[in-house]
Image (cartoon, rainbow, N blue to C red; front, top):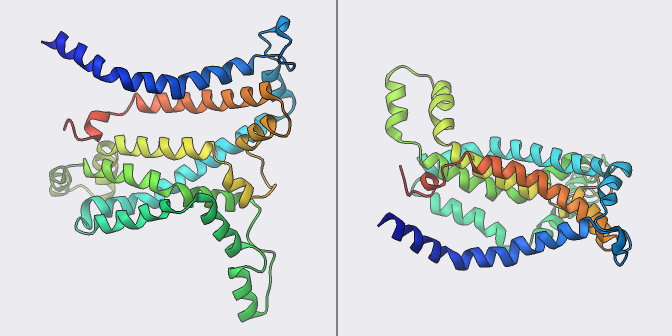
Length: 284
């Protein structure tokens, strides 16, 4: 019976595996193949050629990669601190109004990311909403709040908040109320309950939320372009430039593969430590 169930499960999963292979694996293999092609695509006598990977170090593209990963890490940490109280309220306190909060957060996703970021550009720019009101009421003007690293991180936090909030709320919902009450009855402080009950038992939701946020933020480009200007060049911007303006497909592919390898390794390590069955409610 177990063998039959395994075969039926494999058969049922085949269409999804084929779809993932065609839409995910094949394009990645194509990008990987382009990354080891010589600068002249038709010069196949020198294939494979890994000079594009060497150019990443020689031309300093690793700085863009470091900026992308660093800002992704910072935004993930900030989002965790911001979303934990709200997620706890959604899961344990405002149970009746969780749907209202969920709709309120989800509605922000109905508007294009670029449109929302342009709204912040108009708000934070010199002569914009904030600077205009300050100058009107105080007579003091300033250059605006755009085009720096903190405002880029603010944009990442603003855009990717739902991707941290909902997995956190799901993870916190997995924590039994009885466990918290028992710990409190035994004299545990709120801080100890947080560190020894809430965080360990909500770990699947924490890992998934952090992974989603980090992976999306590491490959983000709109926030740095619209809010940061030329203050920081992120790795996604370098990939776009190599493929479009530079017409250097091997370099663009190599940059993309380096980012995919780093982010993919982090994601695989994180996913292997998550009990997805428990997170989806199939096992308690």
